[in-house]
Image 1 (cartoon, rainbow, N blue to C red):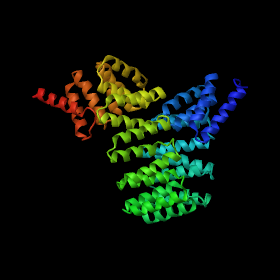
Image 2 (image 1 turned 120 degrees about the vertical axis):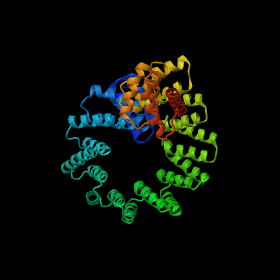
Image 3 (image 1 turned 90 degrees about the vertical axis):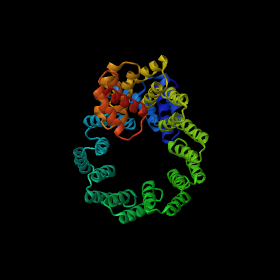
Image 4 (image 1 turned 60 degrees about the vertical axis):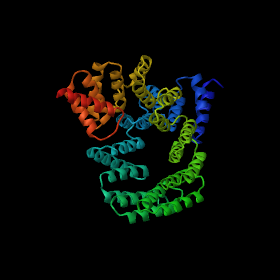
Length: 472
């Protein structure tokens, strides 16, 4: 039934298995066949969204998941996945909105309640964290054997610096999973946060004894040894972990990072290469390879490492951003622009690429075609909750000479991010151009007083000097 519902369903199931095996390219090809035959196939759209998330392409995932949500508006699982995508896209408010909708749609969905509690715990508002703690305590009462609920509660307790409660929660997890590392690892975190590093070390060591391949306690012990200035102990510990489990890519990558801090770039590169060979779609080893090459003053090698990683990961945005920044700092503006053009060609839904490409175009090009291209790229950000994207939207308007339209946008941005020097600089330039000289002066002074270097610092200084000169 190659084109019928049974055949398409079978392709989706095979694709799902490929995702579990981390064969994302093969899975994507299968999903593409399904969507070619049935563009609104929800299972295929969900799979493509999950593949995009695994590749670090949250905007593409959001587009697919929203399409599914139109057909399944009360699906708590879709709402949870959409929340993950918004988090990856640096949109926590939208993530929280979707998680609340998931809980409202299905109050019995324990995982949705846990995810919402975790997200609220990340808030800078202590009251919201306390609300998360209360909600998670109820989840623990409703699902007393759910370890994830207790772990989320532990995080809220640590955020609120309730060390004794956090320690009790860690002990409860030990009782639930006496042969697993998690309870001891969390107990170590609680002890460490309370200022007892020795107790923390004992807990981490016990966690590693129970699960020698557990990366979290290994990472914690590595950082404790580094803080104690025992780099050789770190190297010995990581080498032991790699010998015990040669496929442990986290341990290999950590060992490479330690070698890098010791300026042993060749040894570091060996570990990063091994990690990337084991996990070719993990972006971090490629980035570390590039840093090692830069330490060797091998700029061409660094560029090659970034390009290899971008190809292997299907366009990891972190690697694209790093490569474009490297080009920009070297004055290779066209090459930086091309990085984002390529990323957009591969992933048209990438807000990250659209934002950064638009900013490069209006910063380094003056021709009308480039300004028009930037405008088209940022139209999607006119109502964005992300201040950085909204700032780009306003700055493009300013650069196109649409100062009156730019002003309210940039004012809104600064109200959201009052400590951002670059955003105050953008607002100040629009104010200066529109004749609001006193307001411009105040914002330029605040931007420059931050001491943070930003693109446009020289223009900000020159404009402020001109204002002062004109005012006598």
